[in-house]
Amino acid sequence: SQELEQSPQSLIVQEGKNLTINCTSSKTLYGLYWYKQKYGEGLIFLMMLQKGGEEKSHEKITAKLDEKKQQSSLHITASQPSHAGIYLCGADIVGYGGSQGNLIFGKGTKLSVKP
Amino acid sequence: NAGVMQNPRHLVRRRGQEARLRCSPMKGHSHVYWYRQLPEEGLKFMVYLQKENIIDESGMPKERFSAEFPKEGPSILRIQQVVRGDSAAYFCASSPSLLNYEQYFGPGTRLTVT
Image 1: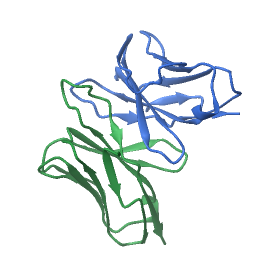
Image 2 (image 1 turned 30 degrees about the horizontal axis):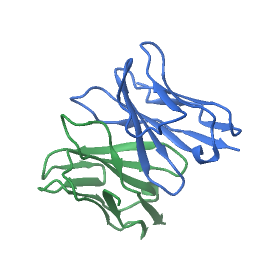
Image 3 (image 1 turned 120 degrees about the horizontal axis):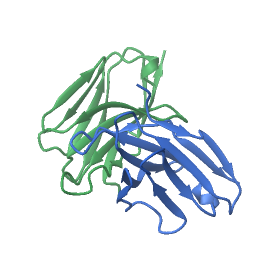
Image 4 (image 1 turned 135 degrees about the vertical axis):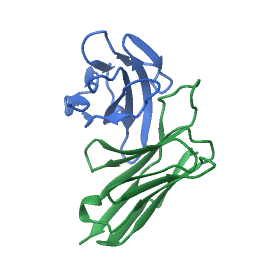
């Protein structure tokens, strides 16, 4: 079974609308990463969250990690065509003392933004 | 500051040949990770290396795959006797240290086995 579930799998929004992507784990997330991938290209690092309740923003993208550190959400405000792509969450579910660096990934959320 | 570099970007090999994928981490980064992305699947961890050491290879297939990160030069992921099922995008990521392990990814190498 998938250890990291992302929802929705795909999303089509009108330009200017807000949207949220979720990433959920049954295990504690010691480090939660959000990446953006354009089709056929590499991953662009967006944000990393580590502490329960932590929230980070970059331009119009905000990511939060819940207090229990088992769920993260990525919120885009006033979406633009440039936001289109595949959003991936990756997580360290082992933590220090374990096999840190061994990230597991969700299957991604494909975002399309209609002009 | 150049990002993570991977080459080649695209590699075509016939079944039975060897594939060598190279990854140069970001300047100042001493940790390298390799991931594989199969069509319609998510990214899967393969191996984590520091200079001259394999730290975790729990995601590496037992046969035909090997990785190294020598003291000098790029990290190499080597696939011997490639099969069609090896066709995938292979991504390398690097991070500065254990205390700061934000992982930055390269553009990937797309391997096609014919």
